[in-house]
Image (cartoon, rainbow, N blue to C red; front, side, top):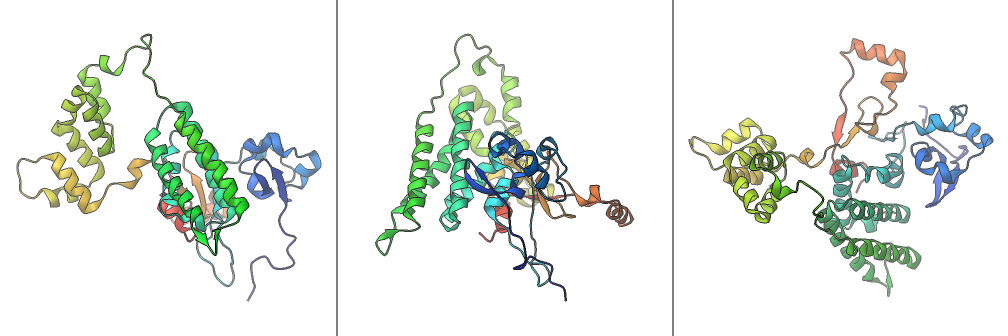
Length: 352
């Protein structure tokens, strides 16, 4: 039986020096725009890049959308594993932090890693990379003056990470001293950025302000909020918002957004008059909230080439590149839609 995998005769990987250390050449192909100024490949290096794609120019490589192949199942014939740091680089999470559509997804991913202290179980390179992402996220929050609460929640996880550093194992902290020294320096920078954020009220030249908007506009804004915690915070911020948040219509739309008609009917029963705010919290305890409601965009898994990719950016798929495979898909009823991958499902690919 053939063994389709690399063995001791493999030539190995090619590595490139970047600002963040050494990285594989094949990983940089998805982040060429980010590393274009620091890789400094000469013409001969570009011709040797990837062998089969050696004739591509750097502009062509830079247009490759971020994507990452995932090993779903290992067998005797196909051996492999998924590396978190390589996936984070290939999917260009650092740039995703600056995208308003993907910001909440990155926050949820970091919250899972920091909240359960899974970060301490990762390799040192992955730990440094994720703390670097958190620092870039803090820079984005400081620049945009938005999502400050999300940053504070992540900093609470960072403080727990620092507590783990102080735990002794045979008289020494877990991990190497150099690694924890790097983490301490990074955490101090992140805390400094967070503490320096000051949100000021717009000056008198900025019109109209929120208080100048009519009640109808305030209602339309609140009807587009998908998180009940934001409604509670808005109701305590301003009397007009408090009056609008007490309306049944706002909570009715929130119930319809998060729950199916069958779920609503099962909890509502035969009651003619319904308090939709109480009904919402009852349904939330029974069924939970829609996870995709938190994210404007999530990662997707291609069912044909087993690649993770951002839906808005796309990816090079075998269904588009291979005419024979495309014909077989047409005979089978057409291509399958990609499967959404929430943050918790993303981490399962790496046995975390």
